[in-house]
Image (cartoon, rainbow, N blue to C red; front, side):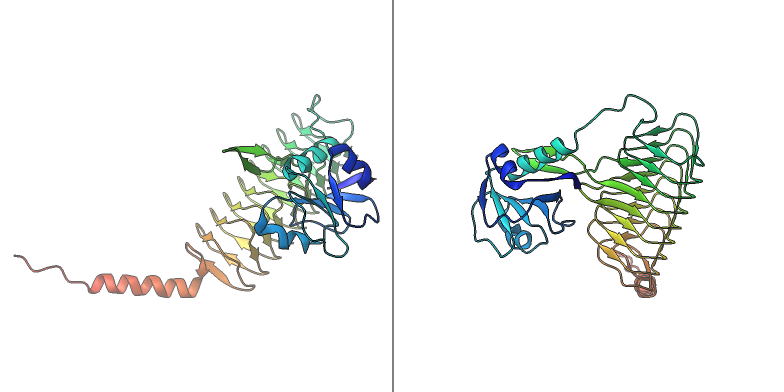
Length: 311
């Protein structure tokens, strides 16, 4: 998430009682989780095993639970509860504002867009020309819908990220401050659910087509001209390339990368990165021709077994 107005770090430190370590050279321009950070961003870390990765990230400001050595170009903001501070900053700059009308007065809807009855459109949402949104669709705050997009009945775009932090043996919900971004010429089937990012964007590339009841987790990305059949599920932060076909009920785990021109056959489960230009099948999904050979071998072994002689 980018701030509407850059934040003075010294004022932020004073407001939240943060110890500042390092040379503050400019304001903070955004706040993000580690997968999305850019220069000028604030992020947080509260586990030793993530210190190195966090301090080597693009983030300029790191909220951290204890002092440590400061790399060049970084500023540490020390507090015993970094997650609490991170979430408080997000809530202040993107507060939860309940929807009180079907279509927010802050939404920007192109005059050529078709909006059927009982559609809910959140604040700061942008809807492009000639887009057709069928009845009973919900589009959450800050979503961006391009031109010539078709969204079928019952779809839910920009829902909260399924993202929690475990504290004191219970789960604390993050405030989702990211967006759902749908590019031009996309079709989204009935009953699809597209989570917005925790702090960045969930993206569907131009020309991609989703069948009914597809789910996209927070921060996941689908490339251009992809085809997803019914009941496909994509885990958070997974990135899918261009011209990918996922057949029905394919499940893809979180934090993976799927190459371009990949096909995954029905009911397969993807648990690792997939190379471009290949067809995959099975659970765990492997290159289809190898998987079929494996299955044929197992079948052959089974048929060769002889029953035990009668006693």
